Length: 364
Length: 233
Image (cartoon, rainbow over all chains, first blue to last red; front, side, top):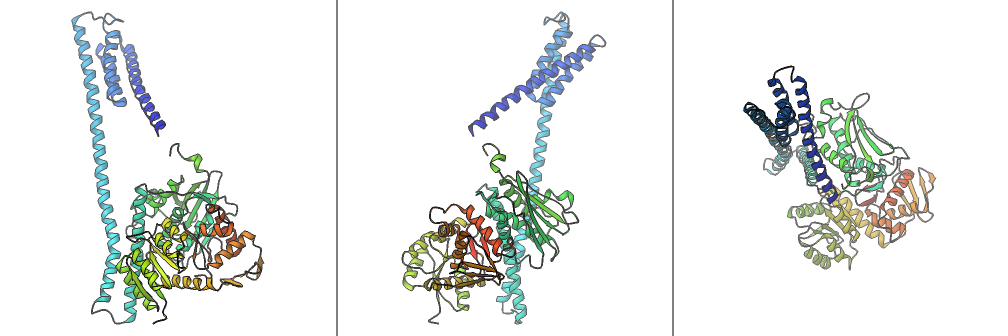
């Protein structure tokens, strides 16, 4: 957007001027402090105080302002503390040297501080790169492991069936085929999640928001999971007067499927799932609560990270379900988080704004 | 073998064709296979199959184009086979006149169920009138009298709700796109008002389903439309 571009440019200029002004202000303050010290103690103490100002400026406000501060403090020093006082004239040669040394030290300080800042920044960035590299390779090995396991099972089971030594017993043959089938289904879910994540990350996601009843999308998501929810009590509570909510059906259905599927994965079979929704003036909150082991407090934010799993290998996924949920919910202008449920279990909540056009950022 | 229903499978992937051929044969159907859209159209003309399974991702043409071609001269049921996430392509083919769709991957049982429904529907459309339709154990719809009972109790439906239900019953078991339903119930010019449709569908569920938030009969097809199941699964 051209206007917002201009605003950022103006904002940047204002901040730059601000930093120089702040630098000048610090010099004024250190000079004033020097003034109080002056007379009571040695001129060397005054030099220290004034130079301290330069150090502060170069640490806080960057290279440019610190150079300005160096020049200003040398001039101020000359003006206030070298005879003749309150004049830029210099009484004798000795003081010219003092002034020169003062200026040089001020420059050296600002330069050294600037270098130090650069080094720190570089080290920090190198640290981040190393960390993401490490994360990436860990992720890659985790994903390839997760994809290979079902593939190995399918290959093993089907090749056994094809081999001359294939089991003759009908039960054994059936068991082999059933494993292959189950693992193929699992592979399908994994690939679907990976593809979905790739789409979300590539920014190719098109959201088609339409105001609609929440009940329908909940019903549709639960129907998809019918088989996986067998044996569980599924309780859905939606107030009759819940307003229509603007959202993309396919995407929000995916959020609900992922969340309820997590319950099916991580809680004991036959433990219940409770879905509910309530509205405030601005948003609708959807809640999916279970009676499982819950999510440890220090992991409640991390579970939304890509490829993160509370306990490795459990659940049989790649750790993308909640990441996808968060991406979809944020794209709708909502929030998603997990808390502990009263009386034990996990409680996942997400919101969808009722009037998204008001909350959306300008130009977004 | 000669009176086995003929299924034309238009699919470019050889393994998928093998799967379809074997599964169809096991259920007593005869499969003929086409690898491209052009071949599919040619074989559809030549063999007059009882049903067409049409893959949406063909190399030479869009599935909806094939559908449009076949629809010029034939009412043969067309079942779309497609990958997940291509809702708009599915809707396009359905709006061109395809009858239903399946999303890859699917099993033989699902394929057969869809084929049976499609064949039954095409047979029904030739012998129209239906009197009383049962939806599951609970719901009885008396079409001529516009009367609906749920567990023996009469339930009042508004004219629009009844029309919506009757439209779904007409094509029971098969998907109806939002457009199909809007056109049939509200008339042409209302094709984009899916919001109404959703609200009426919700009303209908509250009147007919035991648990409207876990429907057994009035099913939603995400991004596409609705499907009426006559029996709960």
